[in-house]
Image (cartoon, rainbow, N blue to C red; front, top):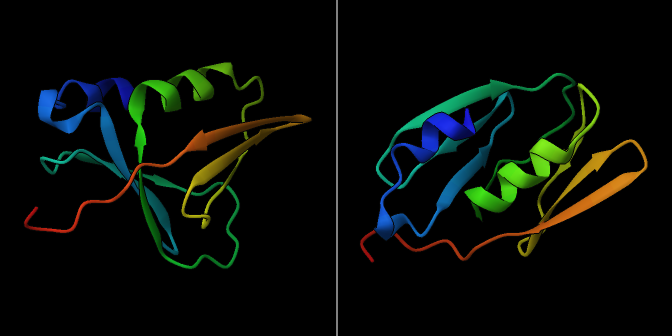
Length: 101
C-alpha cells in the first residue's frame, strides 16, 4: 500500500502522507487525494484523528515489524507509537497545513 502511494507523491508533498484514523478504518492518503483504506484487525473505541507522517520513515518502521499484527497508537499530536511485541517504535508526526495554504 505504501509503495503504491509513493508513486503519487511529488516534490511538493515532501514525502508526507496523511493518516486519518476513523471509527472503522485507517485512511492513508497523499496530498493530491490518492488514498487507501485499511480495516482495523481489532477495533477499539476510536476518536477520529488526522496527522501527517514521512512515508519513508513510516515504511521503514512497518518493514521492521516482525509479527503479522501490531498495535498503532495515535492521538498524541507529536508522535505515533508502533508496538510489535516487546519492541516500541516512535514516529514523529508532521504539522498539518490548513486548507488553502
